[in-house]
Amino acid sequence: MAIRVMLVDDQVLLRTGFRMVLAAQPDMEVVAEAGDGAEAIDILRATAVDVVLMDVRMPRLDGVEATRQICARPAAPKVLILTTFDLDEYAFSGLKAGASGFMLKDVPPGELLGAIRSVHSGDAVVAPSTTRRLLDRFSPMLPSTVVDPEHKEIERLTEREREVMLLVAHGMSNGEIAAHLVLSEATVKTHVGRILTKLELRDRVQVVVMAYETGLVRAGGSGSH
Image (cartoon, rainbow, N blue to C red):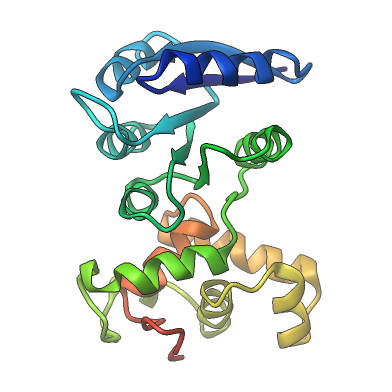
């Protein structure tokens, strides 16, 4: 079944360009378009969508708030934030709101298509190291920079899962974590899956965000077990 994509951007020309690129793919279909977040939410009530390409700067309802409302729904589509500037506060806010990643609007078509496929399969499309750069920059906006030993979310994890979470937050891939902890990659993948389930997170990007919010990782890259 083709990946059902929704384009949300107030620039008609940009939507047209994206639609042409996606229409040429045998495994993708643009099923809806919207000019702002409010229209997107209305359309999603009646249209089945797998991946939303979401602009951030739009009239009426911006992409960050639209992402927050969409991701709060049960069986929500995955959201991929499109932004004009790398490391901008909208990208950070979008990740916090539940987006599975962000990309620059001028990304090469091949990378955009790869990102849509990755998001659809459940992966995050922004490298954890990039996410960490975002969080390092905007860490003053986070509620806590001190580890709270009583933090309920982290308490759900075993010591090993907490160790894996810390390495994910430091930008390591499953393969790198496996080598570091002398585990099989399959075992690491299982640990990451359990972390996502226990903490009710959508993907690795959200793991990094929570690691910063709970103080497990501090701005600048230091961490605590």
